[in-house]
Length: 178
Image 1 (spheres, one colour):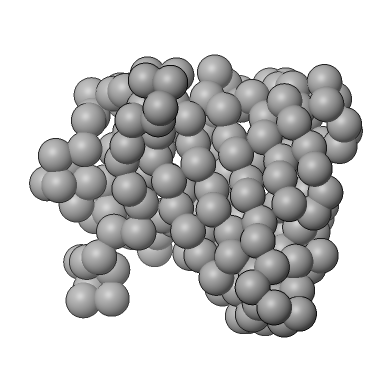
Image 2: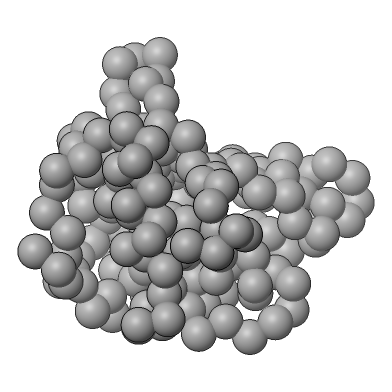
């Protein structure tokens, strides 16, 4: 693993309600409305999210997930939405939470929390989000990203190994590998 990838950006934690989660934080040099687009607009999501996601942005709204080469198409439900500060939805049994905070007119802090349906998915999902958020980071810098499914060039296995080495819970099936 290259020196720039040795530091994992995800944190494994247990939420106050006892559920396991992995959490990531990023700061982007964009106003909050632009970062909101990154996490809600299907065309923006296509550059970094694991599946194409078409979201009915209302509580109870349907989300259609498609196009992930490792998982079948599915649907989820919007659990909460407070534009442009919060979006949470069900995805394959996990709850994804996107929290945005404007730091000033041009900078936004994004926190992604993946509330896990099963603790043994923490290392797998953590590694996956590292790859996806690296694609978002690239997009946010205005550079082209091949997306989260970039193939052999994607360092997912190395990152997964780093999560295992860090003692993050593991053991869940890895789609596309197991």
